[in-house]
Image (tube, rainbow, N blue to C red; front, top):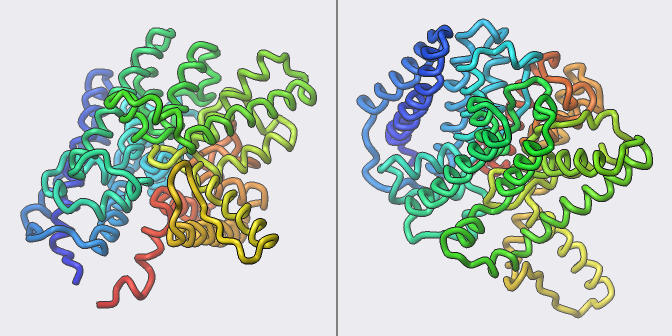
Length: 482
């Protein structure tokens, strides 16, 4: 049986922490002379409800089961979108609940799709909150809970696996809490490094902090409507490219490199090599296209291509150029990159580089089987032989992803959105990229979409962030069977 009272108690802890995370934007509002009411109200409602749940609901007497962990993860992500949108809802800058929920969900899922036409008009407190939602959601709301909430310190594996992609394959520490803390320390350290680097490159402290939050969370919210293009600085772009690349890499590799000093193991990682090669190859092809077909100078072409490729492949969503003005080939490549994404165990979205590599190996094995009918071929990823159960799970995940994609595209088309925008918006939302093609390109926003489309895309953001299984298993009859 699912212990709803115990799950409500844990949800109360998350809500108290979420309410507390609204204190920095509230403090900024007070210092900057902005209206503090949105954060006072939102923080009071969120933390107040969390405190009530802690008092009224019983504390779980034993560890969470796998089923309870899956349900709790989904409820927590829906709750952070619901309560995280309150500062937006209580401000005059958002038209209503649909827009506020869309913006908050986009923030926490690190998608970066926005309904704002002019970001600069937003008060600094709300701008900080937008980027902070990226940072909190990047490493994961539930992973944060495992790190800081003592109740989840033991028996948190169901949550850890449901939340953090790649967690099934490797644990850095014997205890889940220690693993979560180790990852968060690396996450915070990288954020501080980028903050100092951007400040040294000429960004103000506020812009540097917000963009560090967005970069390490691979989110893409910016303090400027024109995104990184507004700063017109090759040095700033280079710094952000480096940290987007690091955020899109497996964080267990960061641990191996910076804590254990095992650089050789990191450099031999097959997924990291595939991920790096994909960025270099796409940058080369698009650079040639820009020079040959768009008349770019070679240096500008490489600079623009490298930034956009890294941004899209890591699903960050920053922009320094309007790639909708480019030729169809780069645009189609960007659409493919949205599906690919970064590495497992990173803050990036997408199907992940290792899964794409495995799919290629599965296809290659089928070719071999057609030629040698009696042959037995194992699929390897580096030195590891991949079990057949893992391959079946991968194929099921890809099937689910395309099924959700097709269904969502149909719903958007039914609401009156054109085909190109429907396809691009769904892909950009499911794989947490942000900017798409058509009327939701890098220089546009999502405000003009119908309410139905925004709710469908909000679902896609959460489903993609939790990699489909965690969301869809909840609606299956088997989940609720005793």
